[in-house]
Length: 102
Image (cartoon, rainbow, N blue to C red):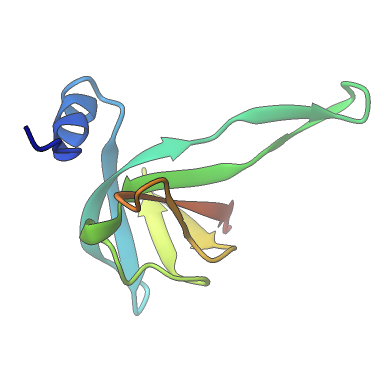
């Protein structure tokens, strides 16, 4: 039996873990793809402040042209890829870290 990772993609979409993200070109949302949007909060300065690190995890083959400085729109908010996206494990999924733009 050949394993098919896309089974996970479909299951994640059914339960709402993945959501629509748009690659932005020339200032306009252009190419949609599905990704898991992660926005964990981390407390710093002995709990006096917190920071948020944004990232998306997506199927590599769906967005092979996402690179450093690419812009994406998620829920109307614009983000910039702030590090080179990194393939995970066997390369089926890739994680890109983001910074929110105003």
